Image 1 (tube, chains in turn green, orange):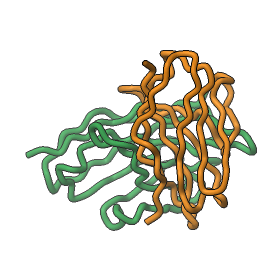
Image 2 (spheres, rainbow over the protein chains, first blue to last red; image 1 turned 120 degrees about the vertical axis):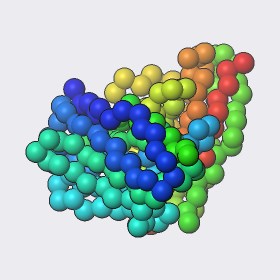
Image 3 (cartoon, rainbow over the protein chains, first blue to last red; image 1 turned 90 degrees about the vertical axis):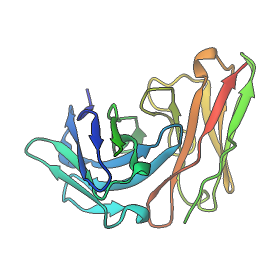
Image 4 (cartoon, chains in turn orange, blue; image 1 turned 30 degrees about the horizontal axis):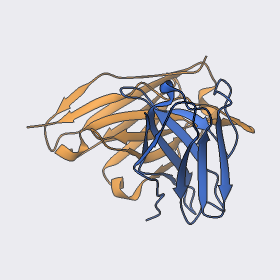
Length: 120
Length: 107
């Protein structure tokens, strides 16, 4: 079965960087892209960007351009999201999500989330 | 930037029908998706491509589209359906956008 397992909780100081991993299993990794979505405490879902696991092409939300880098390692079927110059309002749960659709059918494949706390 | 607009909250009694709307200018041209999120959990896809239901999602969940508004309908609401619901679509360049979320309360 498809599984996305994310790395553990992170605590960072303002100005630092964080790199969250998302280990995929149960499907052909390079056939699907991975999106990253975050959720600040008590807030809604915010799409950060997407990466193709096939060729590494990326599409970042405008508000994160220049501060986020998404990568994949096909040898370990792992996706990574690095966010730099952290601020207190980057405190959030960060989720990875596989492209939901295969042909004409779709389903839900999300990681369990990684809490990133930014505090001095 | 492109926005999807949802009501902040909807309340319904058990066994009644809940309707949650989502409005956006690009919805006539882009598919919509609906996610259910319970506290402390990752979102779960309950409707895709406006009206299709993933395997394992109860039949009481349905979706529809009319012009710039899409609607998630939960027929015969159960207590376990109490959750936050998010619509998601894409702008003209294919970038994902989420609505602000609707808290469904089962009275």
